[in-house]
Length: 108
Image 1 (cartoon, one colour):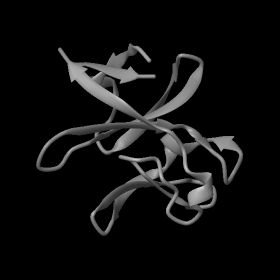
Image 2: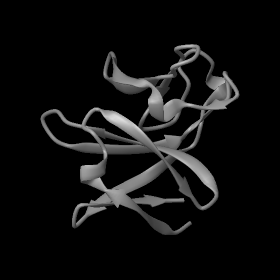
Image 3: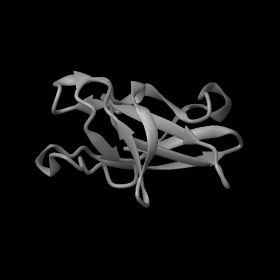
Image 4: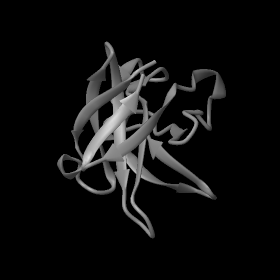
């Protein structure tokens, strides 16, 4: 696994996601603003819907978990782990993310 520069943090509208091609994989990257800025990355491919759509989902919380709801079947994916809460067998990969000098880096 290597660190890959993806984009400037300023190119991601707060509380939304974008899709990027990282090492041949479609990766959904989310920027959340709250008490502190957080950045997450999971696979963009929703195995429930068989479509690359997770970056377009709505971000929110279910209890203490930060999730994205897939825009097709509304399954919730934990942004820290990639776990699909409604169908754990269809969980996705989660990636380490860091921001340095306003650049978003994903390890894949």
